[in-house]
Image 1 (cartoon, rainbow over the protein chains, first blue to last red):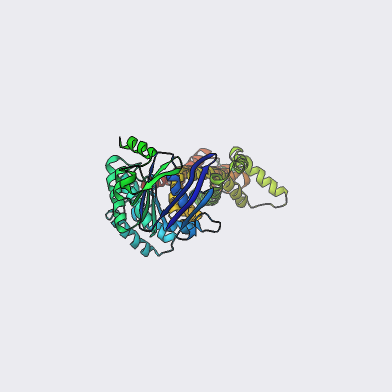
Image 2 (cartoon, rainbow over the protein chains, first blue to last red; image 1 turned 120 degrees about the vertical axis):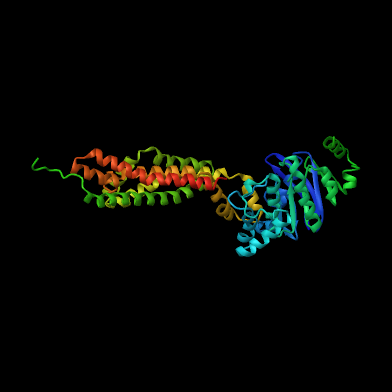
Length: 241
Length: 218
């Protein structure tokens, strides 16, 4: 369970998160929508301890993420994250990309790490690409590699930060299909996305962020199809046209 | 003709010349290896350090880069000699040439480290890798590939610059040839020959570099 309690986050004078409360249960899929700059990506970075917080608490399975003495590297093993930019390691093959972290972080043998990596790559449909270098692959394939690379660490949670935003439109589908696959596996996910239709389809809950606060949260049938708050209505009418 | 003070160039001089070639290769390899290791460390510090550290470190490196190598060699050798620690020309030459190489390599590697984007580092850390694991498995390999050509350029120029170590008495290729010239009075043949030797040492390296660069194009 991820518990976010009264989280405030500022970059200098700019307060990006103004008191966020959110609890994510095991197996839940939560989509976060909202305009650029509303703080939705920042929240993911705070959960993963990439960014510090100024106030509040984030607790992952009982571990206070930002407490002094918390081993954040250890914590990140349980929190898989995929970014807008896929950041494949260009000097390694696809298989080596996915096997690196299990090997160096978890200390698995090369064979064990490769075995896990192969399984995860096959799972995301890259079973025929083991020996390729990622720079020769499409953005969609590289993003699926990034997902497999994160899954190879056997995380308990997956955080997705606008993973389709940098893709050519025709490549978005294959990445969303991979996310659907994870949902079917029962993975706990927080997905920051601009794909409203996708959010409606896969999420247990949708959170609408507006200027650093959660303006509205609930089942997609309400937040997306029948939003109660004016800001949500305005945002959706803008993005849905 | 009768009696002459000079003996012409002969095949029997070849071992002498080859020793010069080997000494050139020897001191170049030492300088390139030490200069690369130190340059990697200094380059990393420069990429990571704050402005103040960088200004101080940069000024220090500028001395090595701006003062002609020949002056550095003479100053260093004379100074440590006067201080009562006369050094073997090879040792003195290696120290000066290594530091000189380090000064250039550090800039090359700094560029390499800076070429790895922040989002790449973040992505690596998000997999649970520690700071140093990211340095070891991601930043060094990617950064070094990016600057390989520049590294090779510095390495090749070090081989040529090693000729200057002759001024402090190290018997490398150029000094060997100078001795031969003073004996034979055949400067043209000998200098052309020496030039060819430098070419033979450097050219395969530069070809190999092109090949490697192509193979690991990223």
